[in-house]
Length: 253
Image 1 (spheres, rainbow, N blue to C red):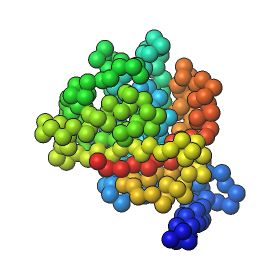
Image 2 (cartoon, rainbow, N blue to C red):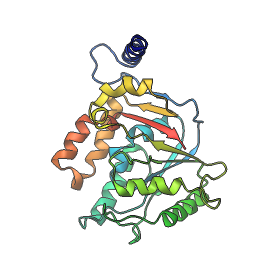
Image 3 (tube, rainbow, N blue to C red):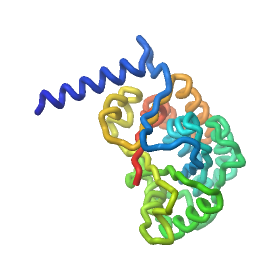
């Protein structure tokens, strides 16, 4: 049993490095996605809680979906006003989305007291679901991408978005013709080993896996650099070491 597990792990390392990496390269030499269950050309809505979520966590997904011909739009549920920087962060978000290929006309920022950027405030699940459903119906969305139940960082606002899409009431989700894809939360070790996480991601079962090239990683970093108000020392380290700047694994609900 142990030998089989070790053999599978070794195969994953060799397959991932041999298929995606050039000799001596620090990042994959070509973009790649495992998307057997994803169609092409969907109207996709990325749902985030704060300005910078799209760059910190979802850049591989946004760029990967664009490669598949998806029309990606963004719905951000707060202006990120926790430190009274909401107006600045709105502008930064639009700049970041521009770098990632999402036009400003496809970005909606909800600046509502019902959804404060505050880790101490629980957003009302029904209210979030209602707003999201209206946006889906108004824009003909057939794929929603958001956080999983652990919210990647554990932020209560991230988790609130997942709770909303988990609504089983017939007036909410799941909606006919609209699928929900959630970003997998990995343990803290995997989270901060950068591209070294690829073999582990390869061996896991997921609905979609997106991996960026070195050029695309640089693009993701440029998007994050637009969020100047948020570039504190620990986020700079995050950009360097986090696998979420390079790799996204996702699961359908």
